[in-house]
Amino acid sequence: MKFRVIARSLVALAALVMAMMVAVPAQAASASATFVKVGDWGSGFEGKYTIKNDSTTALTSWKVEFDLPAGINVGSFWDATLARSGQHFTFTNVGWNGSVPAGGSVSFGFLGTPGGAAAVPAGCKLNGADCGGGSGETAPGKPGAVSATGGANSVALSWGASSGTVTGYRVYEGTTVKATVTGTGATVSGLGVCEAHTYTVAAYNSAGEGPKSDPASATTTGCGTGTPGRPGAVSATGGANSVALSWGASSGTVTGYRVYEGTTVKATVTGTGATVSGLGVCEAHTYTVAAYNSAGEGPKSDPASATTTGCPVSQLPKHFLTGYWHNFDNPAVELKLSAVPNEYDLVAVAFGESTATPGEVVFSVDPGLSASLGGYTDAQFKADVQTLHSRGKKVILSVGGELGRVQVASAAAATKFADTVYALMQSYGFDGVDIDLENGLNSTYMGQALRALRAKAGAGLIITMAPQTIDMQSTGAEYFKLALNIKDILTVVHTQFYNSGSMLGCDQMAAYSQGTVNFMTALACIQLENGLRPDQVALGLPAGPGAAGGGIVAPSLVNQALTCLATRTGCGSFVPPRAYPEIRGAMTWSINWDASNNWNFSRTVKPHLATLP
Image (spheres, one colour):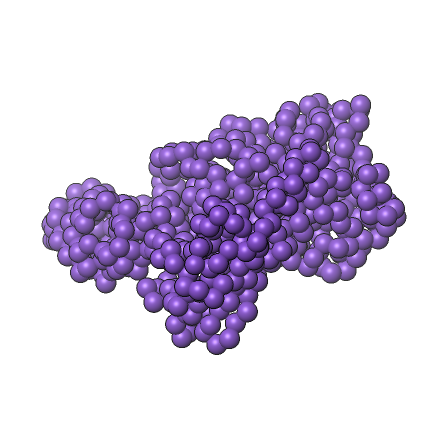
């Protein structure tokens, strides 16, 4: 749910509370600054300092300074300003978080590179005095030497315990998690006969995953007898209505190989390659391969995915940032459209409105917003759309929102929707439409409407969707059905990962709490594993305090979730079943709330998108 109006009385109360927090400064000895390494993924880490005021009077400002080892750098940071001299880093409060009442606390964070055990601040000072408070929990140390013993279709592993606090251990084969345990041993089963396997082990806790162990290898028993071993890594390449596959030969006696999509055999060959033909345009397919002989079929390979060619040529970057722009007046910062910063690639204008005619959509600059901006007119808005176009940006009209009542529940309403939205595109210069209906979505008729609009506007039409999390829990939900029904013309789905409470992820193992990396990755996985291409999936999050009633996260966690989905590294306790390097990017509600929070979201997330594969 996206909020248009927040009661003015709440804003006034918040201002009063902030005013009451200002008092005489406390001495640094009465406060502490505690460091926690939130996550460490080897090539980088996230650090967080919490300043706690244990005195009886308020702090009116704070400054935290520390040293990092040579070669360790700080990139993005938030909720503070930074000054650097060599390896000495000084963070000071921004305007809104300098006051810390007695007994209160504030925090700031940053991303550093590279990570590792040595990437820890030293010599911390808070307002010139020792920080106190000690250090919080950090990721565990490297596990001890791993022992691997091959058995019948299995490998048994044991290792030395990691230093530090350990929640559990993950056993990896390459980048794939093969087991998650709480002790210092595991058995990987379901392997082939006479197969060589190499594993590493990493410990994790609430601060993240520690460094991996040295590798250990073993070979399963039964060499010279029985079914073939598991095929080597499968490579998949999409072509015109086809996917070409190749793989490493299986051990043992091999009669041939079967190529599976799910449980269906798509090809049977004698060599280590195959092409699956007769596929559709721009379709994602996932395959496994198994070898067989007279004794039976061996274990299947790890899956490999590819997308056939012919996907619509995108007018947007491979990884891009979307933001909603308010066409209404509320406590967030009011902005003319031309004031949207360059960090945003796609701007969704919120919102197109309904009329008494089913399916009809109308739009004009909101009178309240116009007054707040000193007389902002439709003509000025149209000129600003062209200004954004000149910067290489795209602007679409979002239909719906929290209060939206656009109804498309008949063929006549579908036609009216397509006709009126297309007319607005021609009049205002919009590049497409965003479907943000939070009630009453009919996938059949909305699908008809969007296909009719595509027929009018052409292949360059941008179509996005902003469902709530509950709308994308099952492929039987209307939003999910709509996304799959128009997959061939859909640009991206940026689900609102907020205002929802806890939700099940694609593993169906736990109800993950909103506002966490696990929540974003496990719920995005539902879409990624149930029919949408990775380039059609983005993460939608609030821009900061005030933007949502729940699920607000530090932008750095959005970055961590994107990296996890793209590379399967830097994840929380949930690790997706495969990497999705084409994950599209992020969306935020909203550009105006981002402005209210010092542009923290866009200035943190947009640069990170360029680091994705």
